[in-house]
Length: 328
Image (cartoon, rainbow, N blue to C red; front, side, top):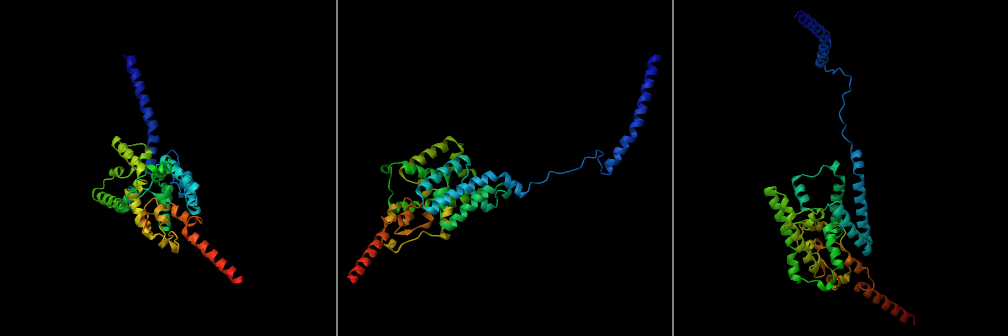
């Protein structure tokens, strides 16, 4: 018992000494804490926000790929090159469609109306895409629909490989009236969104989700019906049902560089018969329906087919004959 008491006494003495020795350091720490010094001599720092240049560097690949694609599209358009046009359409399906799964959509119209746009510094490629779409539409009309939109490109490629005997020609009056359906869908969708703020319904009026390969069985069935119908009625969705195409059609009223016309165009209906989009009516180009597909413009420059050049050749031949007769 005596030994136990001695041991306890010794432990108590040790404890008192440890507390005494520790009082000063803990007191010092308390004082340092109150003064704002953590006592560890670590420099305080915060993660610096990335600069705009650094963010641009992170997005350089996306920006560069879109710039290359946009350059291809514009070169094919300005040169009126049919081979380059089809290269652009294939690139649109593969790059804008399956690789990026990024198309202009009625959803972008919703976000513009409500000011709910992506943050610029983190979405530079998207803003380049949006600016390209708006600027080219103001300058040339629905160029986006004719070359950039992946779904429109897909239906044009389908049109290029399907034999013409499968085509169904819609009566002209019905075709003209059907062209207003897309405007009804546009205004109806915008009105519904503004009232309900519900957005998921867009998948039922735009088939662009197909490039993500993510949809319900009902949507896949609807898409299958649409694509089969497009075999018989060329560019069915783009011409009659696309709400975003309707929005661009409204902007096309501002088009700066309109399609050139010869004086003979007021009598000739050759381009009107050739136009696959129903955009020439009574020898007048309807810009909201025109997607700048190049067909009529290539024909304008064809000196073997366009009546303007044939008549011009006859005039020159007549003048030459008259000149020869006068000299003789």
